[in-house]
Length: 97
Image (tube, rainbow, N blue to C red; front, side, top):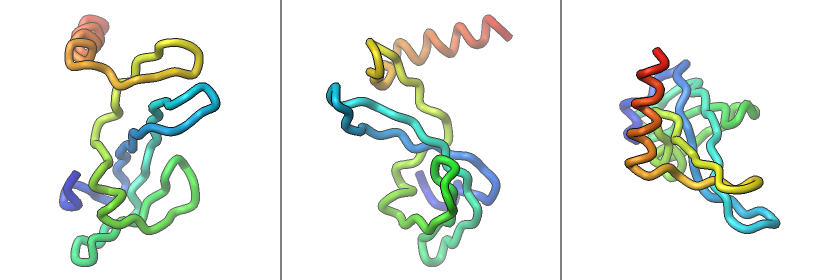
């Protein structure tokens, strides 16, 4: 993600692994952009509907514009979708519309 693509009011997504009692899992969280300071490389945003805070390049460079597709494989177990699964999901969505 480049900071120039971020604008106040838009929603982006954070997707990363986290630990559970059952092992490692993938999760997706929404981020609402409040303001962008390109000169200082800082973004004020609400991560997962929490209080707004300042994020630096370390954080915002990992965000994505589209919500990542996660595939469930068992109770409380997710993984990122493969390219083939993403394509099949997109085709299914287009048929429904």
